[in-house]
Image (cartoon, rainbow, N blue to C red; front, side):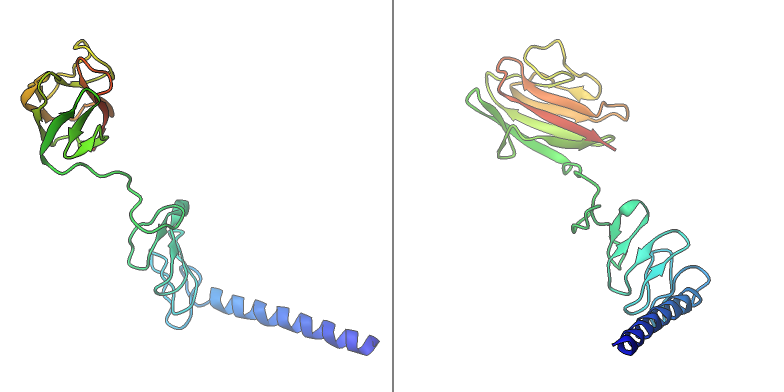
Length: 201
């Protein structure tokens, strides 16, 4: 029994030595970082060889060609360099994108909501330097772009806005470079008719 135990212990030590040797060989396969499998080249995007691991000089970690790549700060990328969410979910992690340039159709649903391009009181994301036209057809509901959410006219935002307060016609918004990050659209009379305008670069 003692001899068997010693043999098992020697085998276990042998495995550790083998794994260590393989690890050192991988370390020596590249001057920039850990080389992957055959043909592994730890480029700046962290792409390793087939089935291998690569750590670039910039700190990006790859899981072999075609595998996931973990960039600095935990940002996930696919092998083509496309950014993914921090949780590895597919798609770009740039947040909301700007609304398409052009005209937004604005009507009303009674006194309960503005309907913009078919959606009731939607949140909008507009880009600085871009021009948007709100084509308003909402009799009895003056359409304002405001700095503070609510009824009335005292909080109207004037920079780059023409036609504020119209009930039938165009409100044109040329978003200035110094526009605040958050504005609102409101009916001057009915508090329920409102929505948030997010401003981004």
